[in-house]
Image 1 (cartoon, rainbow, N blue to C red):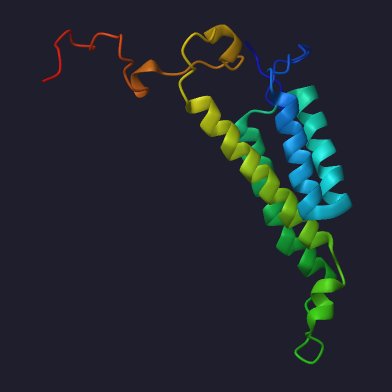
Image 2 (cartoon, helix red, strand yellow):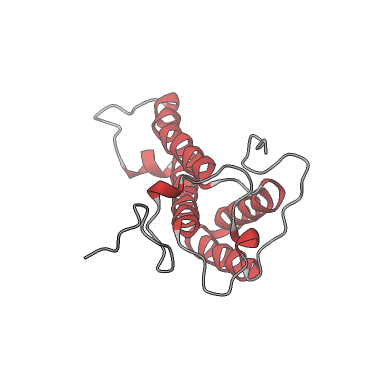
Amino acid sequence: MRRGLFGSAPGRPRRPIRGAAGGWLALGAMLTFLGGRAGLVLAVLLVLWDLLYAPAPRVLLLAALLVVVSVPVTILIRGLPTVATLSPEFAAGSLLPHLLAGTGLALLVLGILRDVRASLSPPRGARPELLAPSGGGVDRALLPRQAEEPPPNGEEPP
């Protein structure tokens, strides 16, 4: 199946996983606590992005990288202060680098959590077709052997 630019199949809405609303509320509460109104706006944008496009962990990590790399660029565009004018007011004068760094950190944490969750084995009794990500297969040789699987060469381990 062909995947869209932001991670999900194009034109196919994604069904939210049960319990996702609690995670979104926790994300919103944490970002609002840490970032105030800007954190709340970021949380709303992240939830909307997740609902509409369901980005893959790799896309979230790439977005985090791009946002964090843009932080020094925004500082350099503003211009570096001279030694005589270097003061805390330089950092307090522009909140854009702070907001970008916080956004990059939130995307990084979300991407890492999604990547770890995708690599965990499903719980017993879960239906794998609901838990498997859409598109893209996993090379089974790279995954650890399950308890009920026979060894690949037919021999029992010592």
